[in-house]
Amino acid sequence: MKKDGDKIIFENAADLPDMAKSMGTTRFNKTGTWRNERPIVDTDKCTGCGICWKYCPDMSILEDENGKAAIDYEFCKGCAICVEVCPVKAISMVEEEK
Amino acid sequence: MKYTIPKEELVHPGHLACQGCGGALAMRIMLKTLGKNTILTFPACCWSVIDGPFPYSAVKVPLFHTAFETAAVVASGIKAALNRVGDPKTNSVAWAGDGGTFDIGIQALSGSAERNDDMFYFVYDNEAYMNTGIQRSSATPKGAWTTTTPVNHPKATPKKDILAIMAAHKIPYIATASIAYPEDFTRKLEKAKEIKGFKFFHIFAPCPPGWRANPKDTITLAKLAVETKLFPLLEIEDGEKYTINLPKKDKGKPIEDYLKLQGRFKHLKENDIKEMQTFIDKKYNRLKILEEISQ
Image (cartoon, rainbow over all chains, first blue to last red; front, top):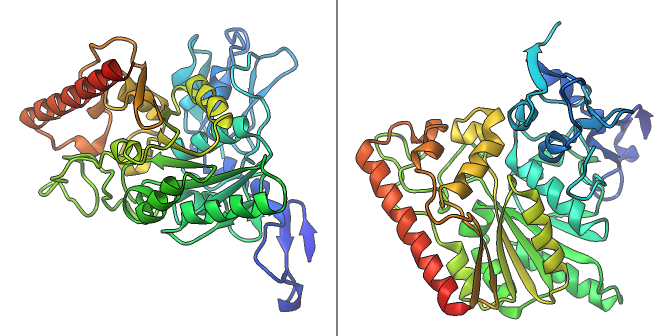
């Protein structure tokens, strides 16, 4: 068994475990590539209330050093729930660049 | 940042849920409260896909994939094994979709509930068989479009009343929860942790692709379902004592507010909507009466 970052590679049949079991996490799957639009946080407006963090299904709201919301672009799928639930309208969606 | 629910994440990002998945959020909130000392059992459901392909997993706790009809009985078995090895503290959790609960898993569920096994059973209800391509289940509401109930023949029968079925088992704790009210959900979980016996949770989890809704509206839809009294948040103790937590006001929002955000109800005429409103009011009034006489 080889590991390439978060990816697990089996080189031949003998490499497989005796039973189906989890050996790694889904962090290998960079779901950020699913996005058409990316959320942008306006840190001047953000009050750090944590509501977007609470409702994110993809654990993609992080906390920056000032206690404000920051987005994990590696995994954010761009569903825009955070934009919808933000009480001060501090998050907006912009088109993703190639 | 203010944290109103436990901070620790027990679900990994990168899981395979669709954009704006209600079921993924439900799992995230549930695991945060139950904690690391948990063993999960998944029958066939969206989460058996969301968890990722072998050899990867999206959760930080042990989990067991099992056949469609056996979620409850496998979780019962895991609890029995835990007791045998002298570990009664670890939570055994069955986590099934509405198909695996309302239709296919109901026999095993009824068995575990009747034996009053000390375990949790969660149904995250997205109101159809979503990961196989939106086929109707017995949790699909009347009038809804699915791929097996096309707009010319929308579902003719109402949603199965799973709460009444579970209440008839006289199990110690039944609760409904919504992803739009995580604080209410975590409070109920903390309460259930202290109760010995069978605990049943019905979680309302909107599905943007299956409901033909915009992913950004997931939370709005879950909130509206509560505010329109379609899915009141309540607790039933010992199958007898009803407590309605939300909505706070008896006069709910009109059901149109909820329906118009979803493509699966687009074909409904004014009469159908009126009929739906009467159905919801009637059901809610019945719950109110049950609450009154059980206090």
